[in-house]
Image (cartoon, rainbow, N blue to C red; front, side):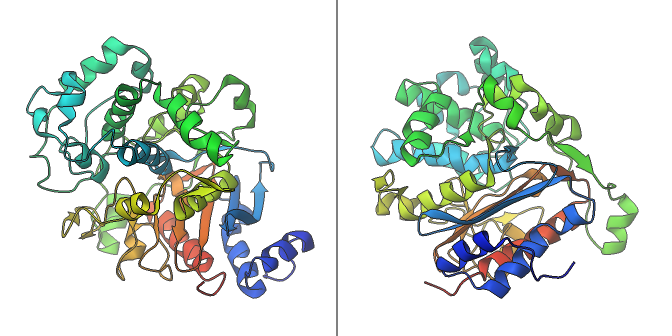
Length: 391
């Protein structure tokens, strides 16, 4: 499909008024929707925001403009940004022991874990099991925390924790705020930013708007990885069954803090405008100092064992950094200061301070081929990062 004429005139005019370059936008949109046009992905929604507002948004495939999508681990940035409010208010500190806040967590050597390590995936329990519906039963919830064991000494290494640490962060938010963490996110973050289409804990009435997740494509075999000279990805809790659980209304309602956010691409892009500017529409949630602190890399020279590159973790977000940024979920042309957190299945979410752009790209098609998925994300993000000149 060619690039010419794929954007409606009204959408194009709106984007150009925000400083986006028309030829670049056409190329970006063509790539953003390509797998829908080819029949691989059933639905995609995309949004680009700048200057605190959405400047381009569209939906392709079997979805509508009012559709919502599960963004999986892109949720981590939302949960983390909610906790930033507690740090900012002096109600939480990174060097606090988690066990001093949640005593039930202290067993099996976990009394050494510090709050900050939960946000940087250095806490030492990456594979700790937790069923989403157990969150609703306080006895089961705390029993899980007590059962968990350390795989390695906290703070000694980096290894991605798909969900475990975010459950503990949600518990900390509840204990320090006195509110259900879903209410805290909604009342202290979502409502002030005016993000009506961002949910961590979806109400029953919203389920008809959610595009169900499906798996697409064929999984790579051990031989495929061998031919590419790449190790097979490690087996984690992110199984096909776990992904499809987010099609269940009762699981969506839990608001899994590390992976259950339900939202539109526009809400995701606008959320990152809020992180970039401290708030939206004249409302300041996070001070400049808090935002600078959150974006400070805390993992030093720790290496991601999967990609064998520097982890570059801030306070619940990933920082693009050096030329290896495309291994961290960003485009090759993003600036080093870009920050974000993508999600399983290829969800893209970031803000780039150099241009003021933020991106939300979401899909209901969970690609079984992680190499193709990764290349798609790098290509889309690279084109998005070049939609305008640096501010």
